Length: 536
Image (cartoon, rainbow, N blue to C red; front, side, top):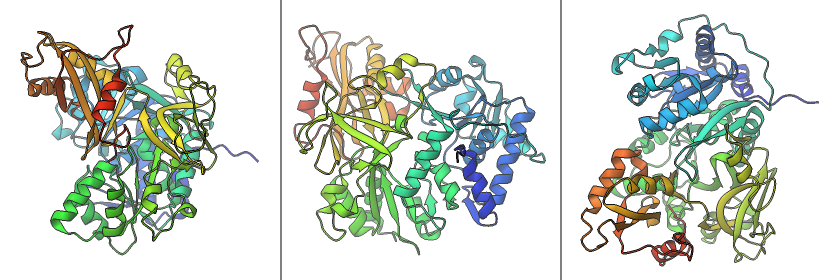
């Protein structure tokens, strides 16, 4: 028998079996059952259809982790509209590009971020603008709650599992973001996989510390809903608030990038809060490998169970886990060395490490190659960008998505990242394009040449560092200060992309053909580290 895999099945299941159970703890104080969450999503679906939104139209959501995001996402997808979540840390010009590139017809923006859309709304073709607090926003915006003033009746169109239902934008390695297309099938299978590997059950209480826009919150908007667990919403990461929520709501599961774990550890050292409520806590981390000391603190001091996972927006995102319990003893310190690795492939996921000719490297834990992957959770391709899609799937070996990370693989098939092939920096779990930073710095008249690389950071894992050749040729007296260049990038880019460190140099290392050898810069910068990628 073949039954189409549709993302709408997740909320349908929760409403069918858990209608009266608490589904969402809202940031505004309300608590909604699954019946109530479903009703609000239905009303949003009806509002969209009444305003001309049809199957295949793109509906953008710019929102922190609130119940409005869940309602707008499911409300869009129930009518076959393509959910397009937006990173609220981007700049208005970023949003202008994305809204136009995706051809977004309607956008819901939280009142705290709507001004970024208001700044560019006259420059985009988007027709509908709705927010959860129009009085707090300049311009003419529809009211979310007013949109829900209907009977919730809508026509659910026929949908097929191979149709695109989500577009997630990733900065990738170039200045222009790329839209990662995900189908009903890829989203559904990924949600099934994390339900298994993250051990989700219907009595779980999930704390939203991971942004929902991050490839749909690592698929948790589907998995947590479908399994009938409870969403505890937030408006961002606050260490004290996280510990408070864990104890007051009896949270059992959360996700946290290594930088968030660092914030929690600092707060714990200064305030000694309670770390659990009535439930045991497990935490998933990704973005960069956590140091052993971090894992030790989380597990031994907090009393939580840590799962280290790995992936990319293009791959679902998650494709591996280091939670391989037959390979370590829960009571042994040896487990930390295993858990900091990226791990083994998820069920149904083929993860390989290959050399430049596409051949598998030796499974000796020393030979280095690029990680490539095949799996049902991998993206369909990049939105209206066939060239980038072709390159992503055919560089070293045909038919596999190329992760751009260089790694070793051991006798168990467990991978461990050693370096990065792509020109990206992963700081606090966010992808930053070094090329985009270089292009921005090149715009300053005091900069003659520049190369940006990741630099080790105890707080963020890695942080952008620029090696700048000053226009006057004198690195000792460059005619501009580091602070001024940092401020320049802050003016033109999202805050998290700001270059943090500047080093003025006489020249950059280059090949005989003049190509900058970033590898030499990274080698020198990471000389005291055991690998050239950040660890929490």
